[in-house]
Length: 145
Image (cartoon, rainbow, N blue to C red):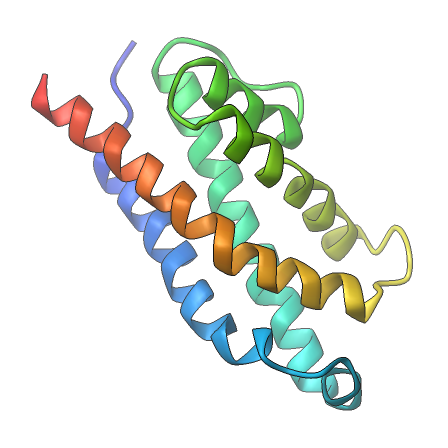
């Protein structure tokens, strides 16, 4: 197996960091103001979707390149990174539900509830910096070998 490509991983990490930065003002919005602004809502949904998809892509790339195979679903990708010591179990368990949110945003399975999206933004602001740090540690450990 060829090792995970650091340039691919760093490009995906950049998407996560840029989107987290773009979402910072949203985290402080009241639900009422958020509901009133269509472009803000749609932009927020797209930024979350891209952020989550970048993480899903990272998970799959790392697992496949490290010889573990692709996870059966996006949720499982986070769990498998914990199984292989890349993420803590607590972080993986906290991040995995974002895969479900991604599916709702993309496929519009249910009406998108503004309060859930705002909550997801706030959680992303807390959890995804930890995810980025864990992937950076993984990359550092790989290049140190």
